[in-house]
Image (cartoon, rainbow, N blue to C red; front, side, top):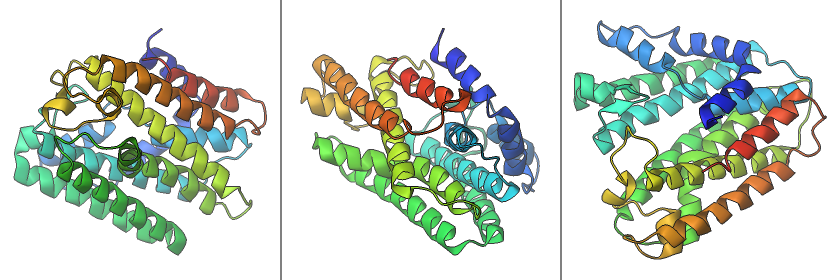
Length: 294
C-alpha cells in the first residue's frame, strides 16, 4: 500500500472531527465570486490534515473528546497553514497545488497575496473569539517563527549551511505549527493538566521528521506536480545537500538524511510510549512508521 492509502486508514479514526474542522474553515468566507467559491474549493481540496489528525488521535488516546472551542482552534491552524501555502505558491511561481490550479495562477499574484492575507484575518477573528490570551500569544509567536523561517531561507539561498541551521529552519517553517496544534488543544482543556514538554517534544520531532521526509522526496522527484529538484534549482539546500556537501551530487546525502529522519521518528515515538494502549495510540505509531517510507 502507498503512503496515501495507509494514511487514509489512520485519518479515518479522526474523520468526524476533521469534517467539523473543515466546515469551520469555510463558514466565515464571504468574497465576490468567482474567488469565493474557488477559495472554498481550495480549502476543502483533498488534504492530509496532519496538523489536525495528530492532536485528535493523541487526545482520543487519552479518552478525550475535543470541545467545539478546541475544534475551532484546529480550524484556525489549518486556515493559517493554507494562507502560508497561498503565499508560498506566489513566491515559488507554482501553478498547481494538490493537483488543482493555485490561487495566484488562477487570479494573479495581487489577488493571491490579498487572499492569503484575508485568510489570516479570518484566523485572527476566530482566535479573538476563543479569547484565551496564552493561546493567542502562542499562535502569534508561531506565525512569527514561520515568517522568520522563510526570511532566513531566502537569505541562505545557494549556500550550503550547517545541519543545525537546517533543523532550526525546519522548526520555524513546519514543526512549530505542529507544536501549536498539540499545545493549543491542551491549553484549552480546563478539565485536565498535561505534560507540556512531552507534548512539545512529540509535536516538534514529528514535524521535523515530516519535513525531512518531504525534502528527501523533493530530491527523489516523486511528486510529479513539482519540477525536478525544485528546491535545488531555487537555491534551497536542504539536509541531503548539506550532508552530502554537494549541490550536484547528493546521493550519499540522501542516505545520511534517511538516518537523520529515523532519529527524529524514534524520538517522537518515545514521547507516546506512555499513552494508553488503544487504537488511537496504535494509529499514531503507524503514522510515525509511515514517515520512514521514502
